[in-house]
Amino acid sequence: MKMDYSGKKKKKYIKVSKTKRETFSKTVWKPGTMLYPVPAVLVTSKSKDAINVITVSWAGTVCTNPPMLSISLRPERYSYELIKKSGEFIVNLPGENLATAVDFCGVKSGRDLNKFESCGLHTQQASVVKAPLIQECPVGIEVRVDSIKELGSHHMFIGEVVAVNVETSLIDKSDRLRLDKAKLLCYNHGHYCSVSESLGKFGFSVQKKRIRRNSGIKSF
Image (cartoon, rainbow, N blue to C red; front, side, top):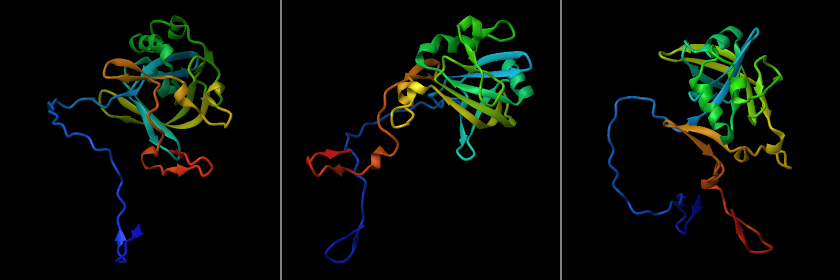
């Protein structure tokens, strides 16, 4: 805080843009799953000689240290059976070019056909778990199951991340991961959407202005 001439501390306030106040009306709906957008990922699993891939949108990060994530599946799904038996799975992050495959793997069952072959997806050996990576997906997150929570229609698999596989073309010269270049897919209330436009990096709203002394040009 800065001091004024009277010796009192002056409070620092965050400046916000002034916009014209508008009145918004809202309609109350019955309770439901309305947390959107959500990821649209391809989860692969393997138990003995059986492998499968399923589309999952009920997925998310649950802990940073140790790194953990969750996926929620209906018990009647084929992948549920494989993951419960093996205790591991891989979350593959697809790009927008795989929208058709993502939709297909969510409506067809691995009990009836080989979805890898039907969608032209190629498997690749993972570094830790036995479930396969999907070559066409830029990121593959290997997970070992820690616990299963029986919630209702869905059971939540909570697992620890044991390895992350990243396409080398997404790593720049400074060894930074440019996931914004992957054009990842998300699911938004019944529709698949692309995640491609960056509106600002984490913390940009409070980032201090820097002045280049040589040019006198302000940068953010």
